Image 1 (tube, one colour):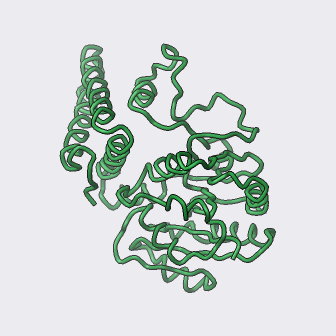
Image 2 (cartoon, rainbow, N blue to C red):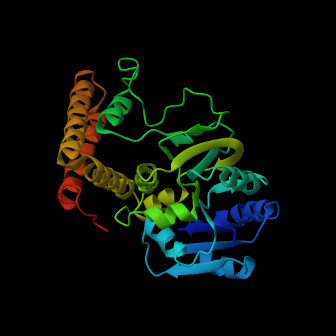
Image 3 (cartoon, rainbow, N blue to C red):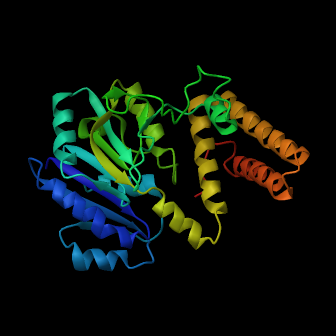
Length: 317
């Protein structure tokens, strides 16, 4: 088996036909056998029945609960037989040449462990397609919009470079994430502590530390809608509080894992300072109590999540 494509679906039934249709067109242009495995994360929108009725060639793994993105891909990996593993979001639509081109590049460059591609939104605008690792400092600079004061700081989502050239990078986005089986055998796939967000960041860190390259490949494009499962999760909770908490938790877990106590303390200190400064600034400028409350709400969520994760040492779900 040359390629295994893994998809995680959580209430994205409306996207499955378009995603799998584009994928099927790309599979016909690649050499070698391929398979598609979908993990359904306890969807409530009829996704499983739809797959059975309209995509009988797809292997479906039904999770009784929503185990998150990373753990669901780990479930699918256990059933995958391919020499290459492609993680593909259900809201990501590949071009017909996507698989043939990316697999050919991986064949020609055996030192590449992970490959990402050029991502565009539905309106054609370029999305961040490869990024620098987050640090407490570059996250703070980006959040506060202080880039012009610190021009040497490499922002996580730096867009000021030529997206038409192949380049090595820190990490690529998980919506199209092509991994060599040998790389997975060496470092595994995703840390199961992450429910959603930062899984691919953490994995690319391990891949690079093991001596493999992480590469951005611009010679094919994927249309990525972005955030469909997260939007569904927010709708089910009737607010964005749950999604915000998941993001905060993943960030705390990441900074504690890779920066230890000092890294976590710096992250918490900078984020706290930004929230307090933002609340004071908006209050003095008369921007309204809603703006002030927004900063204080983020600060409250941050420290509540830090407490529940025991200082970024363990997940809450």
